Image 1: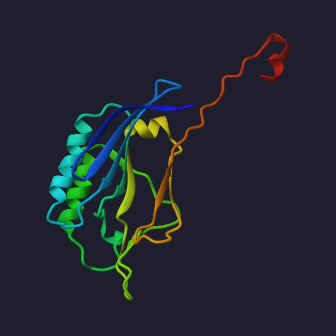
Image 2: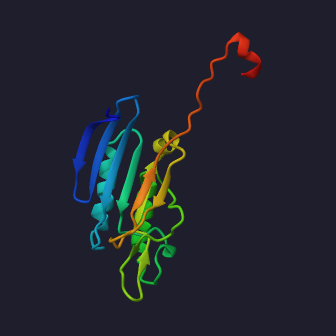
Image 3: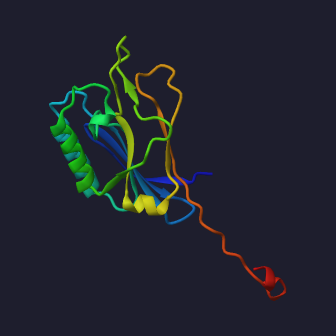
Length: 175
């Protein structure tokens, strides 16, 4: 059985967005996978693409992938920091009303693999408010890194909705 049906699919320069509808309920989900430009002359077009993507979406939204941007100086292990890029990234996140899902057990996700490596947090997951209320126990978990210079990340989304207990007169004292 399928649990999701494809409602829409959009591919852009730096992202792919898939809109899904549950086949079991009225739940819908938008997932945007990103690969931000590694050439830091183009972050404005990447961030504008995210803003444009958001304007066409309704409901819960997850953005996940390699953003190739950091949010603060402590997300990189050297002093080669571009504060205007940090500000632009954080401004876009704020403008879109997104929240970052914390990565459990790891702070940096990329290395250049050199003898004195540069390390940075480039991979992340962001969600909108509707997604946090729909799946409040969402977590981001680092995975084993066999070959890539990036640490793979796994987004786990679920909720614990209490089941309604049906009480009969004979069970009333225990309900």
